[in-house]
Amino acid sequence: MPDPGSRPARVEDVHELATGMPHVTVVDGTADNPVYQVGGKSFIFFRNPRPDAVDPRTGERYTDVIVFWVESEADKQSLVQDESSPFFTTAHFNGHRSVLLRASRIGELSRQELAEVIQDAWLSRASARRGAQWRAGLGG
Image 1 (cartoon, rainbow, N blue to C red):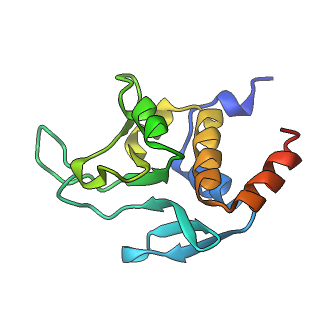
Image 2: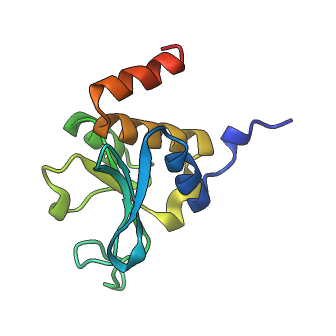
């Protein structure tokens, strides 16, 4: 039987995995887009079309951008500098510990890879106590 974590990720997985993390609340962002928070701090949100994220061929604004927090600038760079990675950033996010992902490219990640990105996003925003408790529950 194939590992369900190895199948291509889907947008529905973002919602399922994010709400599966402890102490998560979901608030409505602009245009009723979900914003996932831990301890009142956002760690994932679905972004409205903005002028800084556009199709280079058509100039059309991307309508499907998801923002994930990362632990550090080094983590961000490791995701966005890899040419094969679907993650990207824009000048608007310079100095912001987050990466962007178009929902239309989410299937380039496995469900397990997406789970790791979401867990890392949660850990980057959760309190040290909550992060330690969660890690202890994983045995690590």
